[in-house]
Length: 238
Image 1 (cartoon, rainbow, N blue to C red):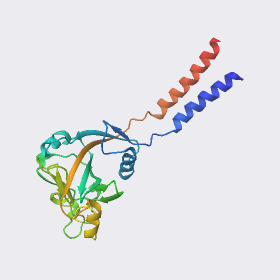
Image 2: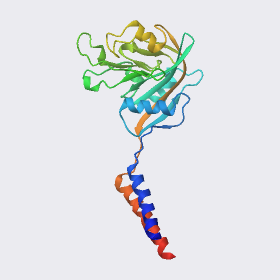
Image 3: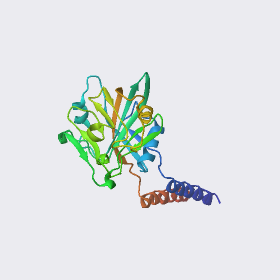
Image 4: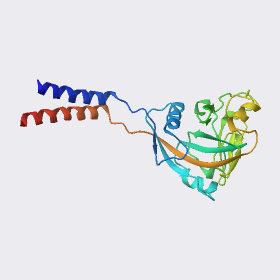
């Protein structure tokens, strides 16, 4: 009877381990800007389970766009997270770039195919996200995904119009060109950035993106059976 109880307990532990997915995003390298809830929100917006965000850049005093590009270029998809300060109010904003940043481009990164327009900008404080515009009519501003320049920080949209940093200490933005609906109003921009003009940048971090490595089901099954076998072995030795 006791043997059956041991086997049942170990089997329950093994199957429970098999059935429990890893759903919470992981922040590797620490962050002064992202909370666990923020990371989980980014995971939801990105629609990617088991997300690991690895801090590859943290802004320090006297850093410029040169420092930022040196750390983040050619690292694949990234989240840029920053503290935007306007009219005495601080909010956490950012953007997702599905392609590598690359200062050598020295210009706009184009996505003529709407299927490739997967970038977005967001305000974590208010929970608002604006995706890259997929409307190909008119001037087709949505084709302009990001703008790369050696001395600039992250810039989203045509020449960085929608959301762009000049260096790393200040920036500006105007929604409704490459990001967000073209019917967005002046007030939408004010609500998003806290102002319609220039805003200051405090802290700034950049994260590389990768799914967490989760053991394959077969591996987990072996772990479970190994536990069961260990229980039987210990029982026989008594």
